[in-house]
Image (tube, rainbow, N blue to C red; front, side, top):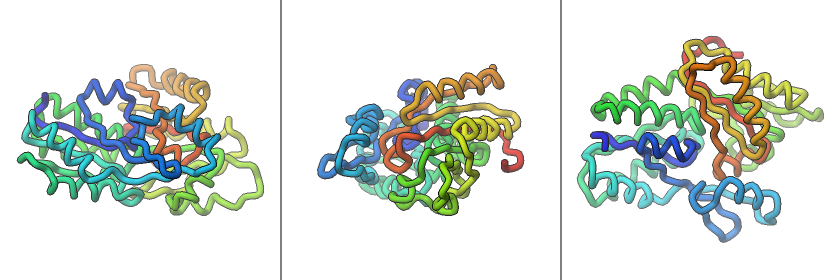
Length: 284
């Protein structure tokens, strides 16, 4: 095991095989349908969740992990290491970061734990976590791991297309993307994250143009070192987009990720995301 263990939360949407490859511990958030509670992506798979979203009379809600969920994860890792870095989704959209901090004080074992607010979510958060895990595996110190994570935070971006923003609005996470609501036209809204908050990017008249926008978003980065396409329900659409990206960037690691139930609660079934690790140029 590396000297520094890496923890993240389920909103990073890391493909399970990637988390396993890099030895990343994932702490799940919670999804609630009525009185039924589920651990995000663990005892409620994305397929099960989106089926429930279509058929359940109760609308889903989400909540942060219990502090003990993080504390137990830290304690388990502390049996094998003396240093842990936990990388959490943006604190402007969730209290998960605060819970991960609180959990340090609940630990039964002695271990240095540093908790980082990634200021991101989904596979942008995932890329930061992978970068941290990669250098930890190579023998980096905790402070070096944190330096790499913070540097990577400045090199990631996401762009997401929706078929509706009603889920985001209902969950109170819509932020400045409120400006995209209220159109009488059938449009595909596109949002991003900036300084940890949701912001509007564009409206496109067709799904095809929305997908083109996501592709162009990726092209707006130089020195691309990683790409991810994340989807809610339409695997074929995600496959077509990822093939376009792989054709454009044949030597770049490219991940196909599934939006977790927690993400799906706030985005709905029409979500598709492009996440990029690279050097940012101008906004599109």
